[in-house]
Image 1 (tube, each protein chain N blue to C red):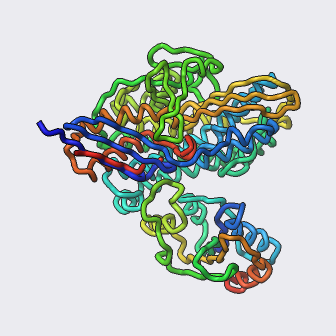
Image 2 (cartoon, chains in turn yellow, purple):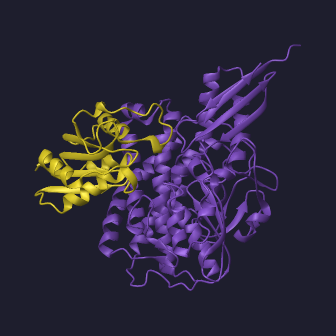
Image 3 (cartoon, rainbow over the protein chains, first blue to last red):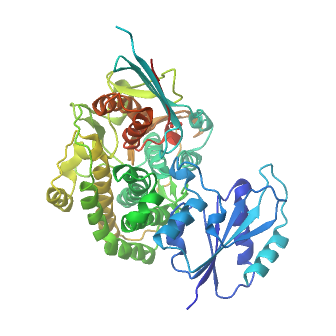
Length: 139
Length: 431
């Protein structure tokens, strides 16, 4: 049986809280047969969290220079820039975790990463429109 | 004879928690200067805590470290309960121990597999190591994950947990929740036994050093939340006497204070704990170490990785014992009555002794606080080890080789620069 999850990752505070807010909004929506989870900076533990699912939609904040609120979709885990040096477990981010998962053969069969553009200088993001767009992409 | 100088600098030490640097000056084939510099800015937590109420302190100190928040919370509650003259119920005592088991598993699991093992197996990172040793990494991730589950069980979340409070916990876990985690622990116990055997089989250097171990010591339990401060050279003091014997001082090249015991460096952490409390470990741990032909006390600093593995195994045994005896309670917390006074807390963080001192006023607010984390206490010992290890390794090696070897030595201590304020950039001067 195909099990699907939408998993938000990141701090629940500051600009990085976008994934937390999106998952909270999605809980108000009717999304049949889709599990909703949020993890605060899980590091490599994300791989354990994704294990029960065949399909995982990961939601995370992203900074690429686009307009805040822009939704980016990635199906290639190599699309992200790795930290140059793994200076600490603090720098073991999403890109490193997904690469480790690929090496270990521990990634879900289908993995889509939804990156939500945030502004490091703050700025309003229309959550309702964002959630509607994300729901359309996923369901 | 012409003087020969060499100056080597490591600007950022890799695979440690936080940012630091090492400056090494070599003169005529001998180390003339060695400075471990922690250059992260001071984090000022002790000042932030002034004017805060007791439970605000417990939530705030959890933010000092993303890896060992439980330790900060446990040292703080102990100090505050000391001031408020609050008894600790047997239920709370056991749950705090269970909480700590989770953090040891989480912190040690991360350090062994992500930060230290690539050194011993000669890989640049855990990702590169995972290609050849996938089962080792999977085992590490699984044990680390079990630790997080325990932290979440009592802390309600594993990152900066919020479940602990002065007097105990805000809520008692349901029996069904405990039973679910207990079943996972029982099923995974053989993995921890494998981990100890695996760490004992690593190609570790056989170098003995003369150092003093310092840890808590409790009359009948392996130390986590309680005990007297003891050393391998006969120190045996109450935690309130810490300041009289263990002196902090500032060095000009580091934002973190260093700490000395009667003027000399000392070691805190899993190996110091094991060196001073081996007899308090259960027979199962003694048997596995005997089988692996590893003896504690040990003066080989590289046995630290084995000590961490042993503590993961012990934490699992202890967690199973506590969860098997778990009873639910409707009073997970003793009510507090704030009062003025001075109190001390000292518990065994994954990286070693974590000492707190608080002073509260009549309104129940903090008027002053002091926090001495384990990495500050280990700094002078790391510098001493580096002098010994680099001289033994050979100072005529290339700068890159010296840099790599220095990092291995430093990483072996699992320094948390984020806690101590935070760590390696190597600068070597040879001329």
